[in-house]
Image (cartoon, rainbow, N blue to C red):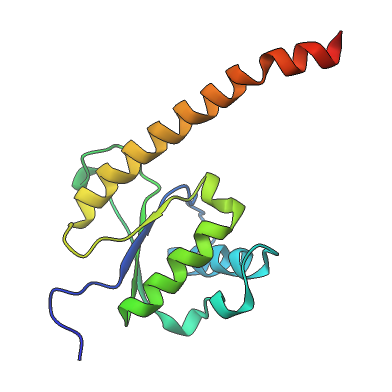
Length: 140
């Protein structure tokens, strides 16, 4: 039995809106790409049937202004855990940060994701800065 406090939600950022596809199709395509990734083991494949609902979060509901956040709900917490593990192994994690929390509302999760994206951007900039001497040595 699932308690009322247990949530089986994840938020995916970086999924573009499409005038020809609905959000369900976009999320299914995203998980298809995750499933096809060589980094994601077969035991972590996400079947479309375990997705309970998909809802795009409006920027008016969020503390961030990122309109590309999608809330994906699963029937069971174990399914959302499986989705998180699969996505974390997939290189799509560069543009789709996935996060779940049992005690945060979607707006709080969205703010957390925005913070994580900012941190990731800084880490990427630091990595690029650190590799400048190596790139200069290769040129010379």
